[in-house]
Each structure stands twice: as structure tokens, then as C-alpha cells.
Length: 254
Image (cartoon, rainbow, N blue to C red; front, top):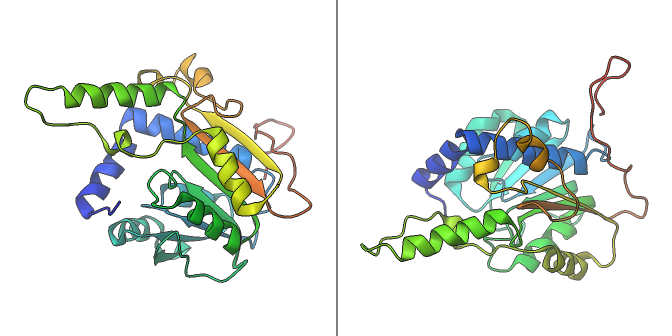
């Protein structure tokens, strides 16, 4: 999918809605949890399909040396505006990365497989350029959110004027845990994995209040609509992820 400047503006506008802010906060919390065992200082991290840099900015705040790649020049322009000199940004194809083997310590692939012509090629390239691990996040087809998207898509198709108003989410390739694990196995062989998900309820429940924060927080495996897998490429995997809690006796986890 080629994103133009108008598409990028609509994409960024969604992040500013109440549902968008809540969803991204829970997604980032999940990703923080999964990478909490990764070292940060002097660690090179690439996000493939970085878009406007929303998640990449988070990983810069976590302490990584960040780079990003996206096929859309408009997205890279938006990422450059957001990140400035903090990121090394490239326009390129995720299925043919312009980097050497093991050029990065870690690679992120966040909700990109849904749009790729050859998702397995994307994962093979991610594994090729990563030395220590990769993190893959995807939209879970077995979720209440997917059912809501499909309902809206059917409703839009049945409108009397024949016009469709559904978002692109109704047209992308939603995935499931078994498919993603199979693709990762084909790309990297048998490796240690850590999995999780968030956003169990439909968008109407994406609210920053109890009990919705509990319902849509970090969940096992792929119960939520946003699921992620951390794949360790070294024989000695990182530390077991732990949630960061603030306490009087200890600061937040590194």
C-alpha cells in the first residue's frame, strides 16, 4: 500500500482520538513488556515499516539507537518531522532490505505483514539483518475488533448509494498466532519465543477507566486484537520480561 500525504494526515489524526490514544498506550505497554529483557545502550534497532515513527519514537525513549525504513516517502517525511536527528531513516522495500547481514541488533515489524505482498520474505529479511532478536506485532483475526471491522465492512457494502466508508483495516490481511509462528519458523527455524496481546474488547471498550484498562491490558498469547511475538536469535535469550512498576524502594525497570 502506497501512503500519500493525505493518508498520513488521516493516520496521524486517528492517534489523537480518545480511542486511538488509548489503543496506542496499551500497544506500547505490551511492546515494552516483551522487550524488557533486551539490552538498550549502544544497541542498534531497526523498525521495518516504521510509518510516521510513532512506535520508533517510543523505542528511542527506551534507549535504543534507532533506524527506520518505509516504502512511503510521505511516511518517512512524517517520521523525520517527529524524530529529527534521533533516527536514521530510509525509503525502501521491506522484502529487499538495503542492509547487510546482522547490521542491527534488533528489528521490529509492527503491523506490516498485513500489508506486505510477501510477508514471509519480510520476516526472512528481518531475521537476516538482525543479530539478536526480532519483534513482530500483528492484527489478530480471531478478535472482537476484527469482527467489528467485518461488520462495518458488510454494512458499508450494503448501503443504498453503494459507497463504502470502511477503513483500510477491512481490506488488509489479518493474521493469527499459528500462521505467524509458522512464518517465523520458516524464516528462522526453531527459536525461543515470548508472546502476548492486548485490546481484548471492541473499540467501544477502549477507555482509560476501570474495568476497561484491565480488560484491554496485557493478555496471554493472542486473546487481544493486537498481538506480538518476540523471537530470540541468540542461543542465550534475554532476561525473562517483567512489567515495570514504580515503587518507593526501587525505580522502574531498565
